[in-house]
Amino acid sequence: MKFGIRDEDKSAWERRVPLVPVDLKTLSAAGIRMVVQTSPRRAFTDEEFTAAGVPVQEDLSDCDVIIGIKEIPPPKLQPGKIYLFFPHVIKGQPANMPMLRRLMELKATLIDYERIVDEKNRRLIFFGRHAGLAGMINTLWALGRRLDIEGVPSPFSRLKQARHYADLSGAREDLQRIAAHVRDEGVPEAVHPLTVGVTGYGNVSRGAQDILDVLPVEPVSPADLTRVAHDRSLSRKLIYKVVFKEGDLAEALDDGKSFDLNDYYRRGKTGYRGIFGRYLDHLSVFVNCIYWDERYPRLLTCDQCRSMWAPGLRPKLMVIGDISCDVNGSIECTVKATEPGNPVYVYDPATGQAKDGFEGRGPVMMAVDILPAEIPRESSADFSRVLARLLPQMAKADFSKDFDGILLPAELKRAVIVYQGELTPDYAYLKSFL
Image (cartoon, rainbow, N blue to C red; front, side, top):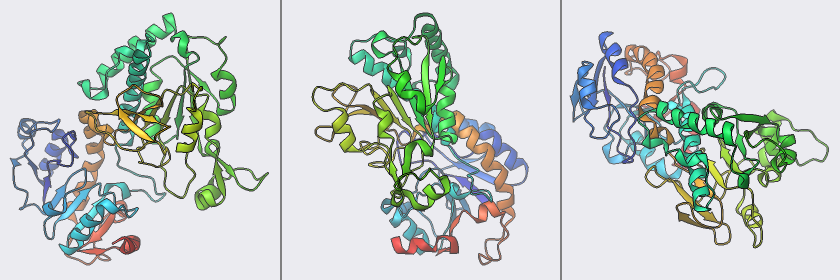
């Protein structure tokens, strides 16, 4: 089989690549035929691929397998091809049903990175950590800009948006300078104690905390947040970090019943109510890193926003970094996703409207939906390292056989959404969305 890496065309800001030159060179040396579609904006240039011995060409029609990252427009899909990318279809997302339908009409095969999982349903290939890294950089950058608008000098003003750094080391150097300033002079009196809340503990959260922990951070439990958030006798030379797990976000509807994680995931809001609102008045910055869908209670509703920013009130909360970026989702005031070129807006609780920039009454919302694209070389390299290990086994598979007969590793076979134009058994439920 011949594998082709497509140019990403969903967004002008998308600069990632699923396989980097060094890994393609190794795959080519192992006898796997690889080519790369030419691109003017990719973080790895055509010349870098050529130097690695990988052909660069405009047309991928001679490739059996086409590998990308983001969704592919239906008119660009080709008959009978095998596709690997993030299609975002497993929840029946309406925007991507025409693409799924077209793949089936073309008798194509679709492998979804999101469903490459182990036997415990843990994802094996992802950009989540890098979304967390870039998202926390952008959130702290937004904090600095908001404080500038309010006339509060702060060390965060020196931080840049993630995309303006050549690589993560540049961001870390600025963060280390901010950390030194906080250790020496403390955070501004106007925002002390500075509390940062992070929801979740998966790859996204770990990436976000990796950035935050460059600063002088003191962990605080959710139970202690109310006390810490307003205790001005605490040291200004620390930033107070709170990590929230599921049991901090919801409680059972049945009075007296303790939180049960498995029951929560099974019953969602039919058995549990959201309680995260009790923490929101005590956070300066809130960074959301959780998976969410309609089965579960929201973390922050528009009604809660209206109450928090009612006339005469001045909430502690300044910035929300919604790394999960579910529009009208767990954070209902994420009313739109943003792009790296225009990454933030202020949500006005009184009107429900979003105003681009940092100025206005309401929280600054950072809701970029392609955050890993802001650190494209690092995120691509990590993704590529995992994907490259899967391709040799895929190259040996006989895709002319029926689905039951094809010999693919279990983690890859679990990820096949469409095979030769038909939904595979695990994804037959998607028929109802088509």
